[in-house]
Amino acid sequence: MSNSPEYEGKAKQLIPTDDRNVVIQRFKNSATAFNGVKKGEFEGKGALNNAISSLLFSKLEAAGVPTHFISWDNATDMRVHRLQIIPLEVVVRNHVAGSLQKRTGLGEGTPLQPSIVETYYKKDELGDPILADTHVFALGILNADELETVKKAALAVNDVIRPVFADAGLKLIDFKLEFGWDSAGRLILGDEISPDTCRIWDAETNTKLDKDVFRHDLAGLIESYSVVAEKLGVDLNNPVEA
Image (tube, rainbow, N blue to C red; front, side, top):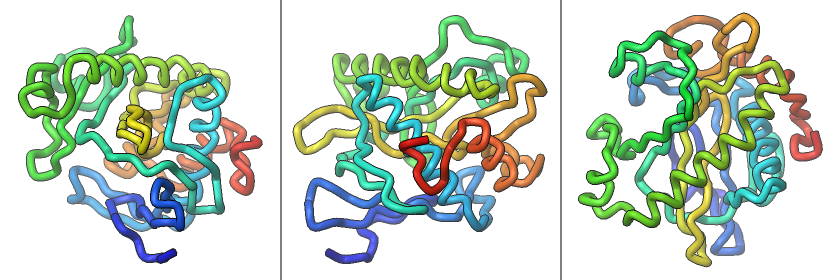
């Protein structure tokens, strides 16, 4: 087994194992924003995102929502099923924020009933544009049944993790998911669920506790992510049993 990554992205590496259908997903301490224009390194960020993601994936698995998660291995590594990732970013929005606010003029934080699911083309050189369903079909990314499966799965994820955040005194504003095909041909959840991929606010103060603090220089990234982990009750040394 090689320790060299077979893939390296902005925030994670994928490292092969002796099982061709299993890889190590290693979380880096790097942070990027604005499509990689803004960059930073934060000691401990990888461990926080790995632990938070591991806890949330374990809760999804317990609730019957299939994911690529197998186990939390150590501070920076989780063991996952190898997926053929679909080039779509699937965004679930519970409240108005970010690009939705710019596109609609609705006030930041406005509740959305029901929650909205959007799809974006995972293509850095195009700026990850939003796609209508017809665009997804025209690009040959998914067919209608597959896209419906992805959207239903995204809402099922929301149904599980939104109450987890709420019970911790946190408001899940929106979040990005990625899906892929496993070796058995199942369309399942991959990637991560962390303050890198979610907008998370304190339920009482609306203080932002996610990557927006880095994007807009609002507060310390590690301090904010640590608040999320603490409120969720994450044990950084054994998050799945937290």
